[in-house]
Image (cartoon, rainbow, N blue to C red; front, side, top):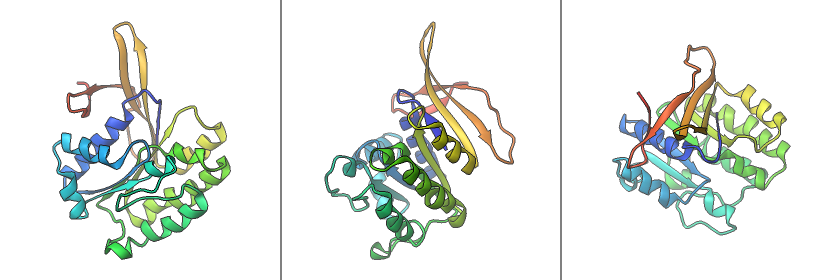
Length: 219
């Protein structure tokens, strides 16, 4: 689980993570809440990939959640038309747990990284208990059942303390991203706040953003 401030480098960082996973031979499912799917492809291409070819090979799946937030119907092959959790629960069972039969897609497995770049979006279309329960009973447990790796991000300070406590208790790790004011200007930071059953460095680390928007740790 990622908690990030709106001005942080999370969006560039999550695409950097996705690109790195793909370059090592893994597969990525990217749920684009924050921006159009075409922007995701463009950014991945800047990071040295050929997104369209990876999609054809089913090594990359870009899910369009963004268009539904505007009240329009998506033209993308993979999309979500309703952001109501009752509809999403049905979609989730079909797409995540069983693959996509009509497109001949296989279920997720250990080589898959699944990223949701802004899970807070559901709060705009559902009451808090409903969308938190969806994450707790459908989304988060699916990582274990499909043996895949899932990263879901939420905007920091937007929801109630109850929502954050419920979500934080259900995940294996929590990562923070923020932008901080300093004497020399603003600095981008990230840290591993907690991880289960592994050792980790919990200190804040500065981030470096390259010209192609790749995000790396400053050395």
